[in-house]
Length: 313
Ligand SMILES: NC(=O)C1=CN([C@@H]2O[C@H](COP(=O)(O)OP(=O)(O)OC[C@H]3O[C@@H](n4cnc5c(N)ncnc54)[C@H](OP(=O)(O)O)[C@@H]3O)[C@@H](O)[C@H]2O)C=CC1
Ligand SMILES: CC(=O)N[C@@H](CCC(=O)OP(=O)(O)O)C(=O)O
Image 1 (cartoon, rainbow, N blue to C red):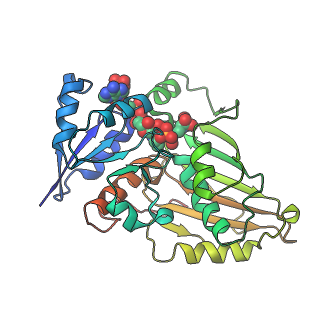
Image 2 (image 1 turned 60 degrees about the horizontal axis):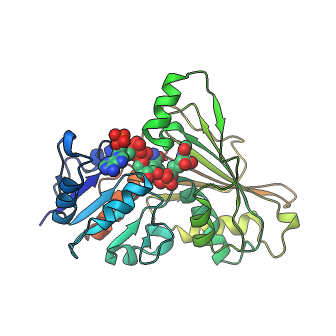
């Protein structure tokens, strides 16, 4: 039996990527709306209530509105927006942290934000293992390809090829802070410095750790071991060997799309400092790949079915 899927927002950046991942998958049938009806509330209501799984690739307000259109108790939802990530009654769709069984059984799944995917993958298992203190003032420095800002930011970079780096979130109230704090179980929101680079896709999330000043923190080697154990058996989240060679990491503009994520741990020779770095594709594990991973689980399939798991290191 096939699972019928309706992508609301299928013409947007995330929606298109999900369509590409589902193309040719015989386990799924796609419900689509003609272009002129894609924002028509009654056509959307009908499609959402007709499908087995609705994937919302919409701005937050439109995602809330879409959920309000549902009156069929059978319809399951995966919401790619920020609207429901810390909302009551929703399961946070971070398979490796929350549990595959919980996501497989859920009716309402919120897809994690791209930056929190990198941050939580690195920090949450280490807080759980007692190797990082939950009340530490964490910092997160991150760069994203401009597709992370959807069609509007893609158009802006196309219109102004002179932009090499765009720092933002300078008001220090980024919408991803709540989910970073909630799912890492932190006492405080992290200090988050995001930026956009002149590349279509790709993301690096860097968490610097002043180990010498932290009470009760583990060593870089202990953190590396804990992360390696935590992600054992995952083809999607991979932990690179501990160490400082080579002494650089690259994001390539020509990297192939990937639904995987690579985690790195580096430590100073004297043990007083470390850096945890996640490399991922904002449109892959940071958005569309994670949505398809959840869709697979909610449809009773192995989570990595149909995903592209290349490494670009
Ligand atoms: N891009 C990324 O890397 C990531 C995006 N996300 C999230 O996914 C969601 C979609 O983002 P993204 O794909 O980047 O954004 P885009 O702007 O590229 O796409 C959004 C799509 O939704 C359509 N839309 C807007 N309002 C409505 C409506 N009321 N009814 C139906 N369709 C509507 C838009 O149409 P139109 O353009 O005509 O207005 C557009 O096609 C957002 O919530 C975003 O935050 C999450 C993680 C990463
Ligand atoms: C480069 C860029 O602008 N990125 C977006 C986040 C992309 C993402 O993860 O999306 P949602 O949390 O909205 O679903 C931003 O910082 O607002």
